[in-house]
Image (cartoon, rainbow, N blue to C red; front, side):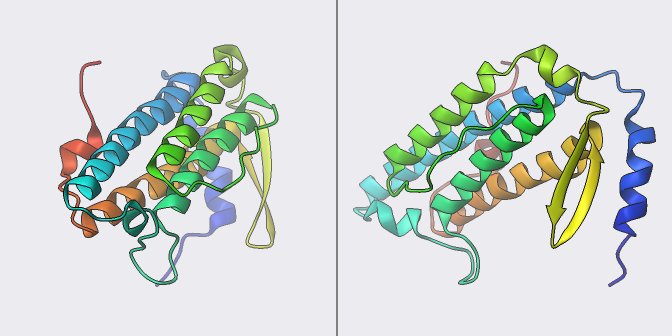
Length: 189
């Protein structure tokens, strides 16, 4: 399979994002908050499903789609990390560090709540000044440079949604009666 030249792709992105009519804040923090609200509802539905079927919650929390993939708990932790680290990089501040020790639905909900609390503490102004901020990361052993806009749209948001979607997929694969509208959440709020 042929892949796009990633170095060239990263260079081309800032020009495509330079005339944004959507603020960096609007494109980031509210999106993460909505995702966590929806994930929280999915976890509530999973806990209720486990209780109604007399399934020990750890069966779902430790479930994986494939043996070499992270389990549900790690997907939630990774979504948390993606949102809080992504937001912190955009704002030019330090992200809080959370230990990955959650083993129950209640603890996963607490992780989400702590992440939401951090996201809500970051000012709109800090994020809105980030579109041209340089963000440098080491990805697969290579230094990768982004502008704030290219980082948000090509790494941070896709990474967040990868883990959010995988958490949904694990629950659905294990019988939790969820559908697309459960994943998408409520509209018009």
